[in-house]
Structure formats: C-alpha cells, structure tokens
Length: 274
Image (cartoon, rainbow, N blue to C red):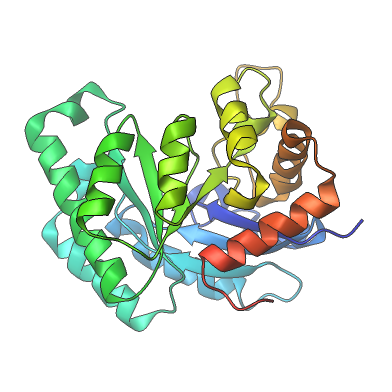
C-alpha cells in the first residue's frame, strides 16, 4: 500500500542527523514521507536550518523540505530583539511555509516568573504579528499555558491558523484551537497506550482536525524505543508508526486516514493540492 505522508514538525537540521541525514531522507521518502517541515527555534541555528533545507531539496527521491523559522518559548532567555529582525529577514528572503515553533511554555518553574513570562508573551506577540504581516500560518508550541495562548490569539484576531504541535492539552482546549482554525499535531505519543489524554482528544475531535508529525529527534514512537535506558533517536522514517498508532486509536484503516491527514495538512499550510 502506497501512502502519502507529511511530517509537519521536524528538527531534521540539528547535529543529531549530520552523519546520515541524506540516507535518512531517502529512507523517509521510501516510507511514504513526501514532505517535511524544518522548524526554527533559535536564531543561532537559522543559517543551518536554511542550508539544510536547500541541501535536502537538491536531493532526488527525498521528501520536499519546507521552512518554518521561529523563536521557541522554551529558549526565551537566549532570545533578544535583534533575533526578531533576523527572523523577519528570513521571512522576506526565503520561501517559508509558516512561522514556528512559537508560543508559551511554563513547564519549568523559572519560566513562570513574571518577567520571564512577560518576555515570552512579547516574543510570541511579535511573531504572531510577523505571521500576519507575511500572511502565514503558525506552528504553536504550548506547554501548560493553553489559556494564555488562546487569549493572545484572540487578542491579535489571528486568522491564518496553523498547527498546535505535539498537542498536550485537553479536549476543550483542542476544540478551542480548532475553532480558531488550527489542526492538532499528533506525535509518536499516540503509540503509548497510557497517553490517555491524547487518545481522548483525537477521538473527540476526529481525523478531520489532525495532522502527523515526528518532532524528530524527540518523541520516539513506542515501537522504536529500545529496552535500555537510552531512547533511540527519532527520525522522519518513523512517521508511518505515528500513522499506525493514530489509526488504531481512531479505528480507521491506514489508507483512508492517510488521505484525510494529507489533505488536512495541505489545507492548513495553504499548499496547492500536490
């Protein structure tokens, strides 16, 4: 069975893949991955991100690679205002599919401090405005801050939609994001039987509001983890396992589900039907 898959969230540019990126790209294409998105998170990595995208797109029989540059909230201490200028420059000069990954993160105690949270909100706000300026969707990173993210999206009257990446919220939060035009990003977590919250979300919202991602090199699907204490590196080649986990959760056959997710992705990333 030939499936068309779109990995909507990868960090395939990071050094973890420097030794075998090309071989993995060929394997991913063979596994059905037709497209992948390279996600930005730090200004210091922007040039590597762009160079990786250009190099991957010179390869034949490899997934088509797309850019989504952004300044990640988890690294808020490392961002300064000049980095927003660098981001704007990339949006002007490179063909970008989205702005990402951006959002709010209060997973760590220090990120809940008022001055850190204010800085996160300022950078999130500025990047929402850049997405509006360049008429692009956004790829959201949200950890323990769904209410604040929803409030800010409404304040900005953001209408370009995008993807709530590696979604970790509940059903009502998912529905609120869907109402604002977002798809819900599903990672290898869906292969974990004990990820009850995620299973409840995907079953409640249905396949028409979901997209696939590996978030490689993180979020390794259960079947690809070793029995040792070291987790195996996740790669875009593993995307079919995410599809299989989702198909099992939704009780939908692989082929029809892959078609729905493919079309969802093209719609939310505003790509022509390919």
